[in-house]
Length: 188
Image (cartoon, rainbow, N blue to C red; front, side, top):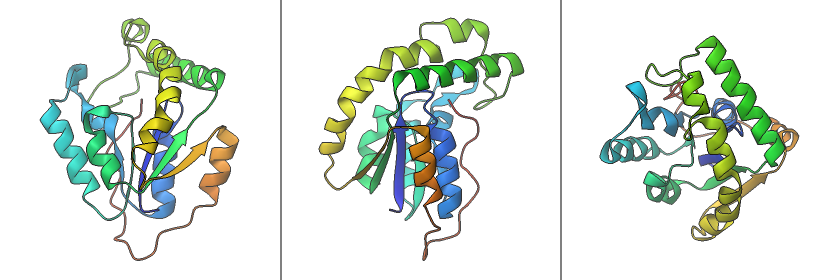
């Protein structure tokens, strides 16, 4: 387990777990949201986004989080492990709602100067509605996606307590370059 992608519904805690895992293993962390959301909430051009995923995943060891299909063929082909935060809907929705309210109230900077606003949070593409719209679809398609990549080890974590226990059991990798600072900030 040296090239790991953390996936899950928006609000499940992908970025938080990926950051902590990368720190425990002593490898770099990359966040696809930071590469996708340019200033002013503009979506990165496809070629630019794919180039960033390709450059990051060219290393021998890393942890990356995100569900983006726009570069799945690159990241999943290079990964050896998928960590799936497959939490029940009530946990995910509670988390995404609390996180969104906190971000709107504190005006926390996410990626490239972006901040969540009340208008954005309530929009059709806002995080709460996005999580509701995608939760069950992602649950339904993830096993088939992993099956299409038989080289991947799947670690399916179904509760935050299970994820914490698994994370605590991880030890630093030996024989890899020391980690560079996280390649992204914030999290969505």
